[in-house]
Image (cartoon, rainbow, N blue to C red):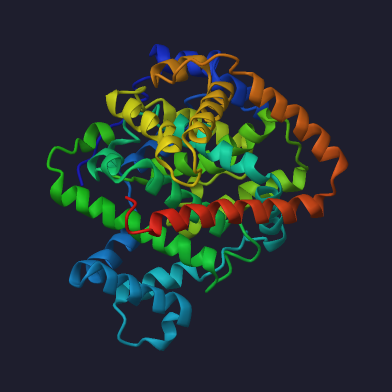
Length: 398
């Protein structure tokens, strides 16, 4: 691999300065009490050209030697039955399972439980946060989107993409989900191999990939930023909606995603332990990312219009209303400059729904027991997932 010398190239750009001095970045600094600087830039920047080699080897040995469906079934058998039963499994597969089944010294199942409970008890606010802050906010980073563009994710459609994200998120945030052979663990392994498969396919077929500027496809640093989306950005979103959380729940959320990241092959020293660390890591990463381009706008609008395409709601007026509510939440959660760059439509009374939600959350938090909120949140999240899986598995819907 060539040795590229990466600099914090956008640190003097208006989009970077505005984000960190008056936009969402400034809010994240205030929220986390982070001390941002470029002191550690050289410690992190090599990971822009670093990838999950273990996952890549498995894809070469298993997925590239047979039909995709057969390869997936083979991997599922290893996950469910344990690799020790398969003497003839490729060495790369044995290596993958040796890494993911070795429990790190820092792993604390009580904290993972607290993180999972927090994800569940935040109910539909969790799903709104993932969609209208984490996903759409991520589209503002042009280079982060390049693998999506290269794999023609836009053609696949936002309903399918949202369904896959939801399926992954729900399954890794339930009780005991990440224990070996459980469903969340299985999702983490499969997702890791999908990343490797996509990366190797891009390297093979997308000849105009600009490694020096865009980094390796689905590189470790971009993966870090994505998982900071699931922890820091997600937490900030819930905070903006008026949700409260204990110190243990906050620690638990970061611990949960640190372990998911570990299973996904992200180097451990890239996985933050708390919101302060996450903000400081995120600051460095954003300095190599330009702001939205035309693909960013297309991705954002594809997600906004998903509500109109999605047949979960029967009537057109319901779908239009849902789209309006998501637009309101996007303006509420993201800063104005990001919304303008992504060309989010400006709608009337856009603060009404999010502010009402905030008031209701405060009342609900203080009147309903934590156990009842966890139970209801789990049930409501599973219902949304079931609806999405039902429509995406319908052969007439793409």
